[in-house]
Amino acid sequence: MGSLQRQTSPDSDNDPRYAAVTDERKRKRMISNRESARRSRMRKQKQLGDLINEVTVLKNDNAKITEQVDVATRKYVEMESRNDVLRAQASELTERLRSLNSVLEMVEEISGQALDIPEINPWQVSCPMQPISASADMF
Image (cartoon, rainbow, N blue to C red; front, top):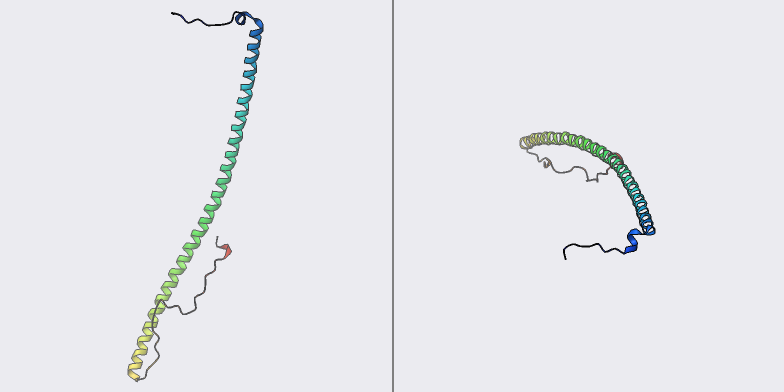
C-alpha cells in the first residue's frame, strides 16, 4: 500500500504513433490558444479605440454644454442687473408719486376741493400682464 503506481497501458508509453498523436494534439491546441489570444487582443484593442472615441465625443459634448451654461449665466447676470436697475427706478418713482400725492393732499386741504389722488401700490402693475417669451438665441 505504500507507493502509488501510475497505471499506463504498456503500448502507450513506447508507441511512437501515440507520441505523434499526442504531439499533434499539443501543437493544434497551442495554435488554437495563440489564435484565441490574438482575437482577444484584437477585441480589447477595438474596445480601447471605441472608448477613446467615446471619451472624445463626451469631452466635446461637455465643452458645448459648459459654453451653453456660461452663456446662460452671463445672460442671467445681465438680466439680474437690469432688474436691479428697474427695481431702483420703480422705488424712486414710487417715492416721487408719494411726494406728489402729499402735495395734492395739501392742495386738497387748502382749496377744500376733493381731488382724485391715486392710491400708491408699488406692486400694482400699470400695464396688463403679458407673457414673457424666451427668444431662441437665449441658449
